[in-house]
Image 1 (cartoon, rainbow, N blue to C red):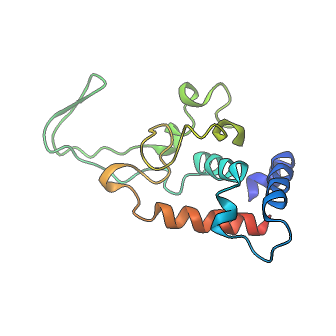
Image 2: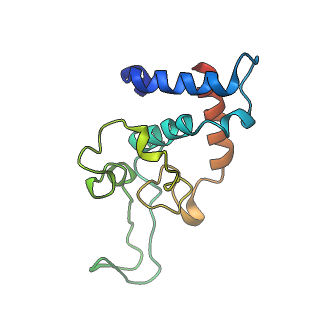
Length: 146
């Protein structure tokens, strides 16, 4: 919500989309949210800039591992910096710190752990088991507030 307050153009665009889809009904439902691509893009961009866990759960290889030419000895704790990944100019362009929901409108990048440039909930076996519930709840709440 704070990002939208700081970016009134994006807030107006999201509000207009919600009004067009939801209309005068008393409350927002999951069916409404499924028809709100800009709201979903706002949510993804917010998660990119402000991940719930900036440092993901540490991992330890069971045996020596090679990652991008670096040797990681067995049982060495490795911490994944999701905050840095989410702001990498190689993945997000020249201004990765700028709030820009439009980069998610094509729907190619998702937060479910398959696209490693966006990992707000982790990935693989250690990924958050409540992704679907949490995201659905927050999307409905955000749409209701707007």
